[in-house]
Image (cartoon, rainbow, N blue to C red):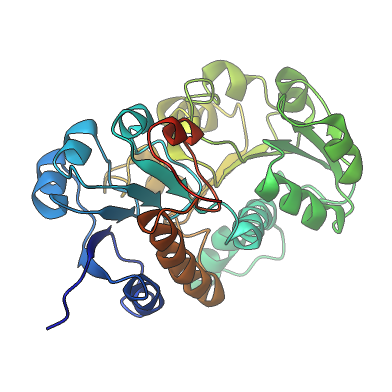
Length: 333
């Protein structure tokens, strides 16, 4: 039996095969990988992560109590971009490094956002269902824009937003974006015009959200925002579920304020079986899977193991979410 120096609990499984590269990276620093399914309650997190030196979290919430139950914990890694499921302030207080992996599946998410946009524009699911029901029509139910010459509004011109802009430009779309935190030179580099949020809503034929979840962006797409969009416009969300007010979105679509939506993320996941979202043929739904490709998942597993191993052995990770923690713990470059 191997004697390990560290215990790392991985909570949430993409696939069993994806865990092996992570395990191998962790074992290079004598860290044991312990795998748990997604844990939905704080009590479950306390029970299954207690005493961990590190945690790798897919989407479970990591509270102060959870981290306090592991006094030797040095690192909590979120296997994606958003870290709203982690109490970052508490982690910093406790001297725990919070790490994310924002750069592994940039292209995958951008591709998925474009795929949702195309599915909405071309009514692909509606036509597919019609054929399977024995119907045959060569007319796509309106509204059906041309894409070329239409306007895509990107909310959040970070790495994924920029990747989407690159792809959409190949469709000869007009590109505008709202991001008050990005330098004008970035807009110019990607051929995107910087506009206010209000102008973006009013001008866009498609609005694609690519923001983190913060107090500022929670329910950013509320009743006012959705009513400010064109009646022929579509909302695409591959960012974080609570960026969109679900009730307001359903109401806007039912009332014809917007044409529809393509959603990969939701305020509640999985969505309830009786959710109105699944009843509307004007909404294209995917299961928080925009990140996925076989190569990306393999690369993620390696990065997860490497990043946690770095912190366990006293080194800075590539992406430290809470640099303030360096006032409490010393991590070498």
